Amino acid sequence: MMFVLIIGYVWAVWTIAKNVVKQTENKFAEDMLKIKENYQNLIEKRAEIHKGREQLEEEATKIFILYEMTREIAKNFNEHDAFEVFKGKLRENIPFEECRLLDVFDQDVESLKKLPDYLVFTLQDKERTIGYLAVKRVSELDKEKIVILGHQFALALRRIRLYQEIERLATTDSLTEVYTRRYILTRLEEELRRSKLRKMELSILMIDVDYFKTFNDRYGHLTGDQMLLEIAAIIKLNIREIDIVGRYGGEEFCVLLPDTSTEGAKYVAERIRSAVQTTSIKIYDATVNTTVSIGVACYPQHGQSLEELMERADWALYRAKKNGRNSVCSFGVYDK
Image 1 (cartoon, one colour):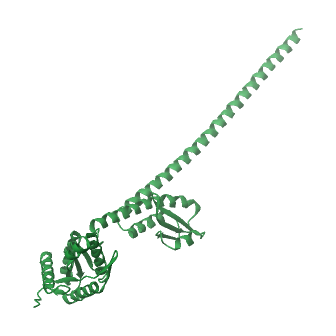
Image 2 (image 1 turned 180 degrees about the horizontal axis):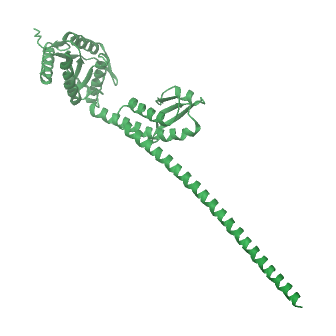
Image 3 (image 1 turned 45 degrees about the vertical axis):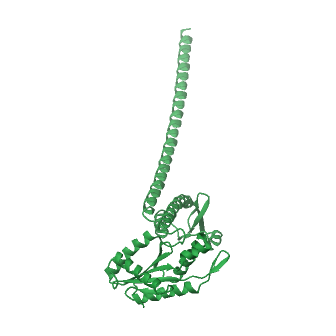
């Protein structure tokens, strides 16, 4: 009987021990599973953090590129120089074969859009197209960068053109579309300094429309304004690109002729006088003819300072009018 009890006791202990071991193993397996899950979560979180850091670094790089490009472009008020800065920054960050800036009227735009090698990005000023960027052989991954940088360049281009328009309005006579008196005097000072430094001659033409007051009284101020606009256009057609023409006041114009002698200035003045005389000016429903008188002064023969040259060119103009108008007179020539 005792033996049976012992066997029963041993069996009970063994069963209990077996259950305890099994429970322990199950608990250990559960703990290991949780540890694996936690470890996997940590790996995933680490990957997310790494990815997030890469995204932040990428965004920071984009912002830095934009900042650097904007800062460099802001130093320029010329479209060509600004584009060269943009192209340089683009090349530092994106491999491409060619980058071109096209205006809105460029005939190549539509043909380039059809070529698979080109990405043509439209530069917008609010709702108006102000140009195009054509970039050749750029990868799909880099196209987003071009779009971002392109938008920034469009803003810079808009700022440059706004500055140029403000500068043009500040220096251009609104009626005749030639330079203002203030600007022409500023340029005369600059050209005079340059002429002295390089030992070159510099000539000035003072041009006055003959009998303009009479014409104004007869036809009205609107017709007179149109005549001034037409005469300004004639003057511009008969001078060089390096010459500078401005409206000096009322019906008077002033022309600066760099590196031009008295004889050369008289030749240009005569060409302008003849062109005005022989041109029939159509104003609204009327066709009219007019003439101009021109005074000539030259540095260094007729004066050393701005004041002297302007005074003597004005004196020569007075003599041209005194001689019967529709004539050219240089300083120091007293016609009888």
